[in-house]
Image (cartoon, rainbow, N blue to C red; front, side, top):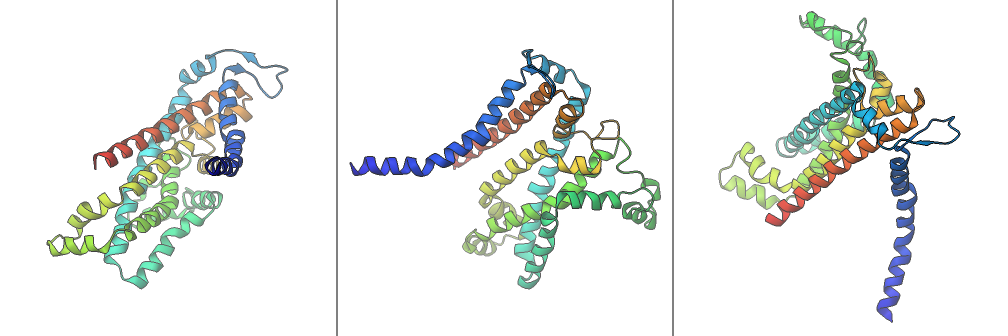
Length: 295
């Protein structure tokens, strides 16, 4: 009787969270999948079933593929900077910097992460301004004036300029996550490495890197998911232009839904975003679990 009462008590405590997930997470995902099979807009008296036509339209749309490639580029650069550079930065802060300076640097690195994306986007729009922006002025000052350009106004540089701003904002946050993971490593491991004659580089690869594996997995999942869910940065800085060169999946589905009023097509793009992010997260978790079992 006591075990049954405990079980029901557990169900009562868990049920509100389950209901919230069902209502605000799983039901919208399922309903979006359903709506992606219809042709409809805000003024449609009744949605018309079209099956997979919206997906066929998306896969045949060159702008969709351009947006997807921009998301992939976003993910690759973010992995290098936020899972690679951030880890190296965190290790340097913990191993080579004095305690007082360490706290100051952590704060300085984290400030961009605490800045609103809208504020950061507007700030970098001024920095990239071709007439009076600091970026072009700095290039002129060091004799690289031939590299100056309208960073957000040219197809070849618009998306990369947005990605650069995003890395400036994200590196400090992931570095702090890695700092926390490094601080949890027993100091005996580092002392043993020093006794064995290991230098900073060897200690990093032999001790730090293996011991922060779980945090690395978390950062990789968050980084890749964030790269495929990116929206605000692009909307604030370029709105997907020029000539759709900086579109990402999030801005493209927004454009289709609220400018073209093609809700079915937008729902199909949203489903693609969900499938991609879910598959990447599931794969990364499976690989992490396999490595943990092998260890």
